[in-house]
Image (cartoon, rainbow over the protein chains, first blue to last red):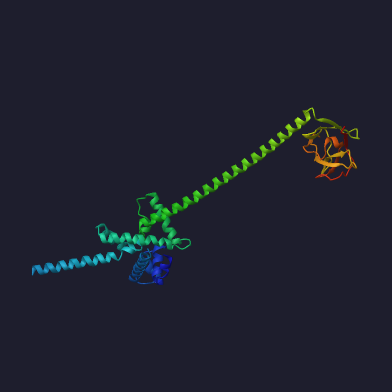
Length: 59
Length: 286
């Protein structure tokens, strides 16, 4: 699992970490990273989708 | 015309439903991880409350996915922001307050996730408490074992002393034993008594015997009849504070019939292989 998230693009990884470990919302992450809200939403969703595919592939 | 208008309307409605559903579907993962803003979260929850089976199933999968993220937890302290929010949540839920939790204005983290974290914290506290209890129990058991070991050693010493006393009593009372009086040249010195049994050994007793001096002991010697009469070393002993002592030799270095006399000298601690001072007491074995 650790290697899967390590393989994510840095922005996706950072956004997921802020959401999961810091408990920040989309808006808070966007403000924190100075990125558009839609971009942040895409990063989180796409990153989670890649993780899901990776986990399903390994299980 | 009416039918065309109705068909067009139905297509628009169907398209709107599909679009809305797709929009909600894209929010499921973010909802599961707790990053949705309040407006999006409220809209999605309303949609889920409508019983959309596809979204409900997707939410289950998303929650499983998010649960896997726990394995990614870094070996580090949580941030102050997370700690603060966690404490607020635990406090508000524990208090059962009617007031809405403070985090609802700033955080979209779902309550089930907080409940999981709170359960993890509780488990950690319980584990620490349990470990401390176990450690105390082990310490108590070690103390008990140590006390039992000391008690057993004490009993063994008492048993050895009792056996020795019984052995001495048998030597002292057996008719086969021979009594030997040891006298001193110094008239101030009290005489000592010895009792020698041919099989059970030799016992020497004394009362009001003066101390041999600091770091010195009394030593028993057997003077043989044959040979050059060189004294044979035997046990060392020292009187107690009242001058009383009992020294027993279960296996004397020579037989009674071959021994001419017994002598006692003062020697350095540990005894000597040959006398280093003049005999203080001497008694003939006849």
